[in-house]
View 1: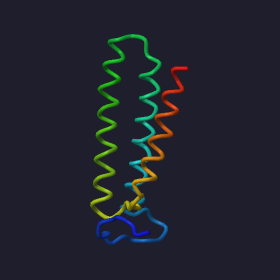
View 2 (view 1 turned 60 degrees about the vertical axis):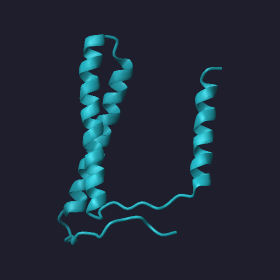
View 3 (view 1 turned 90 degrees about the vertical axis):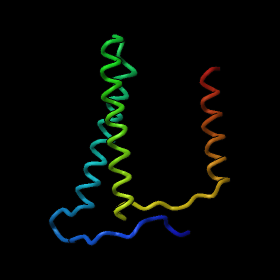
View 4 (view 1 turned 45 degrees about the vertical axis):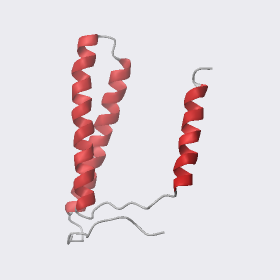
Length: 103
């Protein structure tokens, strides 16, 4: 299976962190902040506070996407193509799980 990626930028390897290392650290940190903020949202009972935290969550969400897109454009993040049947199968499973929540 071929990978989907852009041309890679030249990276220095060794003991020191390079651009890919820093980018992955940023992406991991922002994803963690996004997840924790989402938990905060689900547990907040005050509407004013909920709206404030929701704004912060949306900024983290957008920042996470921007970091990912930049990494992909620079060739620091690759993907593998997935067959449509695998996507359909996963979607079916997720829908079944979601529907079972109502039971």
